[in-house]
Amino acid sequence: MSAYAATEDLLRALGDEVVRLDEKERFAASFDNARLSFMPEALLRPRSEDDVGTILRMANLGRVPVTVRGAGTATTGAASPHKGGWVLDLSGWNRLHIDDEAGLAYAQPGVVTADLCAEAERLGWSYPPDPSSHKFCTIGGNIACNAGGMRAAKYGVTRDFVLALEGFLPTGEWVRWGADLRKYAAGYNLRDLWIGSEGTLGVITGAVLKLVPKPEARATFLMSFADEYAALAASRAIVASRLNPAVLEFLDRQSVRCTIDEGFVLPFDTETVCAPAILLVELDGSLDRVEADSGRLSAIVGDGALSIRRSRSDAETELLWAVRRRCSKAMFRLADGKLNEDIVVAPRAQDELMRFTQELKERTGLATPVFGHAADGNFHVHVMYRRGVPEDCAKAERAVGEIMEKVVELGGAISGEHGIGLAKTPFFALQHSQAEIKAMLAVKKALDPNNVLNPGKIFEPFRIWEHEIVRVKLPWD
Image (cartoon, rainbow, N blue to C red; front, side, top):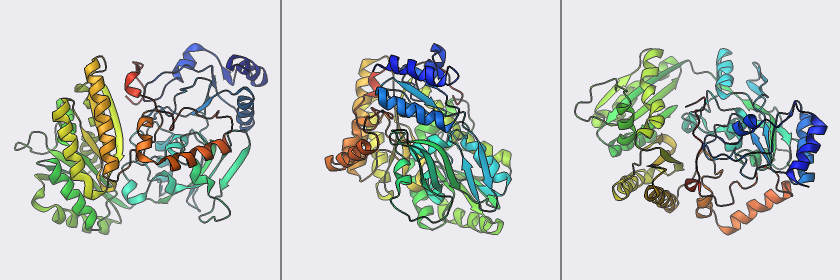
């Protein structure tokens, strides 16, 4: 059966309220934040779990690819319908309930992460995972990619807060993995198999998430350093001290320079270094603990920093964070093409990685700005290139390949929080042996025998730099 015929059958079964064929709506669902457009046959907005089950059963009958979508903030192409077919849009599934007594959140996949955080904090709780797109990204997408964020070093990633998931197998059968319990050891842990599987093994329609008590106090510091190695040495000293900051963010001089060129004024005197490397540190806990740890932090960093600025109000905190929030967008001052790799390396390898990226910049002539989560070694290494210049595209392709080879050589990971999607498929075999990939494909085949759920992702090499991007402004731009 063709995708067209299957779509006609689905339209008759569910109606045009669910099955959307409008070209503009389909185009809006044809790409995610990677901005690679693949036109789907239909956009589906199910009204109920019965609709989801019907969609998946009919997709299997017609062998129609189904790509699940939330807000579309994925940076790797994971939420783009690479093989066409149907896009299953769950962004409107946004019911949220917090059990104040148990410290649990019951969330549908379309709940925006920032909305969950705000409601939890209103009740004296906290949901720590905070991807940089938290104002727009959804819980379903966070779970699909096992999102991390800036507080991951202290609190963990999304997986550490998921107690239970419910939804559908690719074949259309409803399942529930886990329960709203803090302990659960009844059978295989297929809940964690879904987390980070990028929508290839199931469709999430609900999640039970655990919360932690909201910290009584927070203190934010912005520290400048003469170069990247001084900043990284300070970050390792902070971690080694057992201070356990909630946030420990690093920005190299290239990233800071871009932000300054965009008009951002650093909130301290940096005459000796016009664009320093930077650490952003946030401490949280009881008021007494935060004050004691603030004194320890200054002593640990000592004379290694050019300057240290502590926020004394919410407004000052926002000022300090502005350099981190602006740097990614500011990189487009360097070139209109960006390859963003969210790699992870151990503390012992941080300096070698930094030397490699700086040497790569000198050798290729392409900017390689780096920022990220220093405490857990999850750095965002960028390669900036001109998309319309073939020589730049070829250099960028080689540069990213070299970065990934270097990361694996250093014992690191090619992705820490974005996942594989399409963007990292050429490097998947660098990370995993053939035996490991074969085992993963066996799981995929067992759960999705007709390969209908998000096909083409993770395992099939796709050269993202060879494809045109759509020039559109998205809400988070």
